[in-house]
Image (cartoon, rainbow, N blue to C red; front, side, top):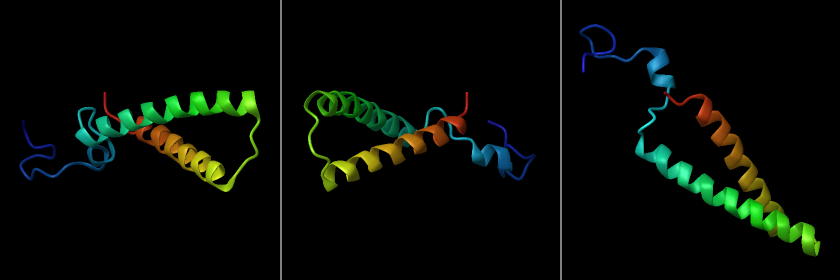
Length: 81
């Protein structure tokens, strides 16, 4: 593959900002997000069905899942074709 920026081999700013579609860490992150979506689906049904009292660990886990969903949105906008 030819260097991205002439003969210097340096990537342009745009090329550095885009996450390659075949990046291994991105695939692992996508699998992690799939697990979080499954957790969110089942735990939401549990909360609606049984209406448990909201504990601190439940709130913390919900916030962590929310942050991961935000990261997924950001990564999805920066992924290549």
